[in-house]
Image 1 (spheres, rainbow, N blue to C red):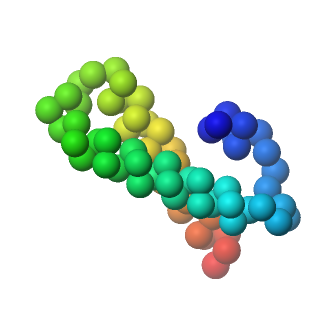
Image 2: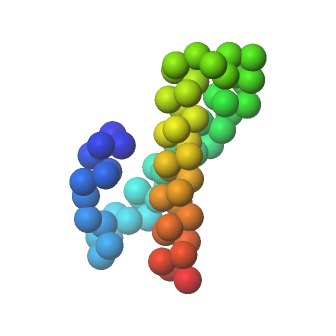
Length: 68
């Protein structure tokens, strides 16, 4: 799903709000996973989730800056 979103051009797409919602849901889910996995922070899966959360968060911040 993330790869699909990465290659799209949604600047003038009417479904842009739906995509923003999807990114927000992913952000919320990764936050909860990372919060509950404090003791397993060195595991590869948790490292991947942390990276996805960071990248997703930066996409959301870019959206906010572009809209301002």
